Amino acid sequence: MSPSKQDFILAVEGLTVSFDGFKAVNDLSLYLEPKEIRVIIGPNGAGKTTVLDLICGKTKATDGSIKFQGKELTKMSEHNIVRAGVGRKFQNPSIYEDLTVFENLEVSYPAGRSVIGALAFKRDAAVIEAVEEVAETIFLTDMLHQEAALLSHGQKQWLEIGMLLIQKPDLLMLDEPVAGMSVAERKKTAELLRVITENHTVLVIEHDMQFVGDIADRVTVMHQGKVLSEGSIDHVKQDPKVIEVYLGH
Amino acid sequence: MKANLFIEWLKSREGIYYVLLALLLVVVFPLALDSFRLNMVGKYLTYAFAAMGLVLCWGRSGILSLGQGIFFGLGGYCMAMFLKLEASSPENTAIQSTPGIPDFMDWNQLTALPWFWEPFHSFSFTLIAVLAVPALLAFIIAVAMFKRRVGGVYFAIITQAIAAILTILIIGQQGFTGGVNGITDLRTLMGWDIRTDEAKTLLYFVCVGMLFVCLIVGAWVMRSKLGRILLAMRDQEDRVRFSGYDVASFKIFVFCLAAMFAGVGGAMFTLQVGFMSPSFVGIVPSIEMVILCAVGGRNSLLGAIYGALIVNAAKTFFSESFPELWLYGLGVLFIAVVLAFPDGLAGLYRRYVMPLESKLPAILRRGNAEAQTLPVEEAK
Ligand SMILES: Nc1ncnc2c1ncn2[C@@H]1O[C@H](COP(=O)(O)OP(=O)(O)O)[C@@H](O)[C@H]1O
Ligand SMILES: [Mg+2]
Image (tube, each protein chain N blue to C red):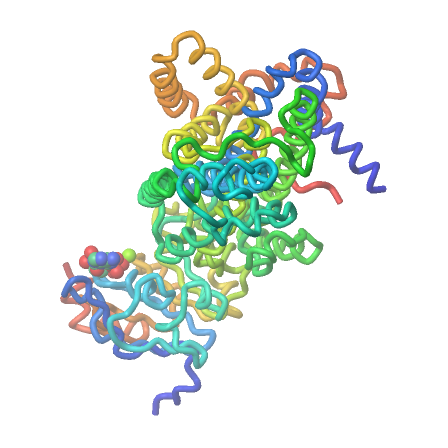
């Protein structure tokens, strides 16, 4: 028996989005259990990024529902989805290059999110402690007071992950976090993700099968906006449908 | 303790810049210039209010408004309405067919004061209106645009269109607004004649005082977390949005603040120049304000003030000597600034003069660690 609806932290059902008639995501369903690491794989253009866009509210669904901890996300504004506990990392590192690493993390710290709150915000001990703690997790303790523009590509990816961590989201969505990283950086990122997943539910899009095998609890394979296969990494690797469209070319 | 911190701040690099500006405006200009020229500097400074607003809204937040003249004009008109009512007492206007209303209304066959003029009998209402009227219009524009995610060039064009519409409206509604001539022949402020040299000198100091109030408010906003959010928003709007911020509300706030700054500038303009007309509301003054800000350095509040002084002084000089060349000169200046020094005078100063500062006495070197474009949190 599958678990009842209440056991899922995220339940996506019948999700569809149509861009001028082209269904980038088509009747997709996806269920995540708390503390699960789910990896979405699939060929380019399969609709993976669009799924994250739909969950975080960047794109509005044409049809279907997204329930997160009992809340219907499809009707909420982006910032309220974030405040409900959904953090999302973009495919290209998006950090604030003109601010220091410290300030990047501080701006992401979940206090002073209204206009008045931001004006009254004080950099108190709790903030500094939270920033330093996250900086250590993302290997950037020594760079705290550097301008973020000076970081390497891999460090920028970590910084953006850190900017999510400091918000303490319940669900963390990462879009190709190791793309463009060196082998050493990939290793460290895998280590970072293992730390993160101790107390977060994580939804990752990734291409690197080695990396996927390292981190995933379950894998969802997408193709043309639909779920092609789902299960353990070994299960999907042996699925003939998957071999045909994705792995076997 | 507080006083010590203040003295420490004054000795920091930033503090010294403020002190130097204050010396220039409060001591050097009043000593060096006659009352006529000083009044002109005061007039230039009124544009600095609008330019400082643009630093917050354009330089810091990436919202280019080509319509700051709207808010400058509204602030100026609010003040002009109060002064005009005072100048139109029944005794002063006894020869009109309807005494007690402004002369231009009488010429336009109005027989009673329009309802929206009535509250401007009160000086306190006027002072509030100078801030509230620009802020209210800015709020309406900002909510309509930013909630719909209209930004960038579209927003700039819309603000420009509104500036054009407002000018046409003011010119067209002659009986209510004084039309193309504007509101002229302003005389006294609560019985105090503002046309004398002494009054103009005093008003110059009031203007400088207000300028510093706006400067300090602007600097405080820039160094708060809100200031960093604005900068983050300019560079990565989506990242800010998906960090749990309602981006539109921050844009609305900064646009309203910029409008209030411009409104104060407009009111100071009316007081010092003695009239207000649609030619300070429309597209040309609005673009001039952007140029002042760009020349001074769109990321620097102090830069905006120097930009306003220098460009306006150049304008006076050129339009006295070669009036037909000024607009071309302004265009060339703008292109040069945008292409060659995008950070304006403040950027040039940072690149070429700051390195020399290390040769100055120790007191000037104290703040070196903080020398950069971004605010650093004060030590607690
Ligand atoms: N906003 C959009 N408008 C139109 N088409 C889009 C939009 N976003 C994505 N698409 C299309 O949807 C498809 C899926 O894109 P995407 O989700 O980015 O794929 P993936 O991340 O799996 O490579 C692509 O064909 C893309 O061109
Ligand atoms: Mg993608």
